[in-house]
Amino acid sequence: MTPRISIIMPVWNGEKFLAAAVDSLLAQTFTDFELLVIDDGSTDRTPEILKGYTDPRLRVQRLDHAGIVVALNFGVAQAKAEWIARQDADDISLPRRLEAQWKALNSNPNAILAHSHVDWIGEDGRNLGSIGARFPKTRAFVALKLCFQCPIAHSTVMFNKPVFDKVGGYCPEERHAEDYSLWGRMIERGEFIGLPERLVKFRIHPLSVSKQNLEIQLALTKKIGTEHCKRFMNLSDAEAQRAHAALTTPSRERQWKEWWWFLTRCIPRLRWKSAELRFWLALQTAKTLAGF
Image 1 (cartoon, rainbow, N blue to C red):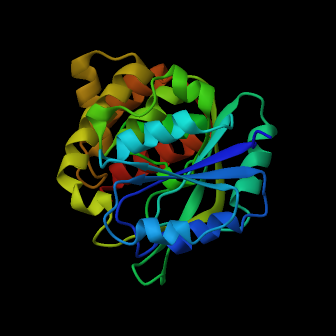
Image 2 (cartoon, one colour):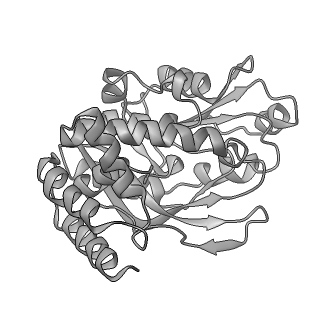
């Protein structure tokens, strides 16, 4: 039978955290899934660890090492289900993660993606709490955040495979920010649901891909964020660059003239609106006026 959900987990030399990641998924309260692990040419104990599992829901595909984007696109292409859940091989899903996301997506016929809040953990598994900016729950606020940062943790998403295929999947040219670009294309096709529950433990450690490629990520983030400003608010190239600068400048350094221009020129043209979005803008305006 075709599973309802296909979980895609790429791994490359991930022996240190792999078992904990796989175990967290096999222990889900929602059981109608396949777990497709794409071994991207690992040379450590990764293949040995995976061979130790006997659960029939686990499928392993081994590739010659070609990088995460190739592994991800291959995994989604091999997936049997209409809904794709993602998790990296160093993160941990809490037992109710799939159940909660499945219920949320099925409660909204226009929804094409669900994501959740996270708790951050260290290399040793120690809980670091919930770090970062305000968690976005509505499509409008996610869209605005996509104009200057990636507000969705990749390991928390569950998305619609047909929509993924229609927008072209993960882009090889945007490796190290491949998810950021994808969310910007997918959000134009349907609703995003943000679940404020912390359903995933997101691991921070020196060997993580984001840590090793920070400079590349920052350059791509600026490029992709500016493009989102242009598309979501129907701006010219120059206006999109100016809007991106207004959003990325810390509030204590932000010039009121530039923020007022953004509020009056760009926000009215943003395609989506929500109370959550308006609250954030009001908060940023107050901080800008106070120089805080």
